[in-house]
Length: 147
Ligand SMILES: N[C@@H](CCC(=O)N[C@@H](CS)C(=O)NCC(=O)O)C(=O)O
Image 1 (cartoon, rainbow, N blue to C red):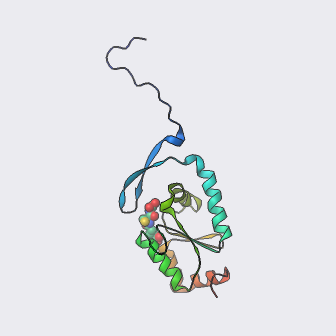
Image 2 (cartoon, helix red, strand yellow):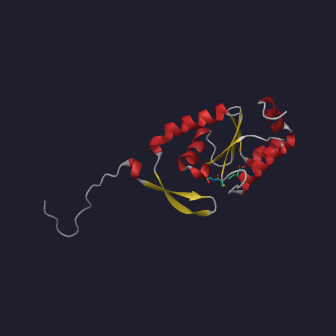
């Protein structure tokens, strides 16, 4: 075929696993991460396994020792204020697929996210309200997480 002027772009096929997507960080710049859509099933299974195998799971940004977001820090303080000593804290900033997957799992758009006894409880605001009313302590008790 003969082209006059600018040749149209050749079709290029980039495997899905190698495509990059940009995602916003809380208070940080955009950064590129691999497209992990293919792993969605695995992530959902992993989350289900985490929240059912552990009485209390907090998906957060950073760690309880070094939270990287004020909301996550506040969620940790709320759990501690209930007398909870031991819980599984999962840093979603360490795994972009998990960060997105956890939003799909409970259809909740933000982090932190608290699970007790495999049930999604809510984010930071809900946790604070439930602690004030005593509901959070009652749930933690019934899950055997506090005395
Ligand atoms: N009102 C929310 C505040 C949490 C929030 O807004 N989190 C944001 C900023 S840290 C978030 O997770 N955005 C989505 C993301 O960063 O992936 C709560 O009670 O938990």
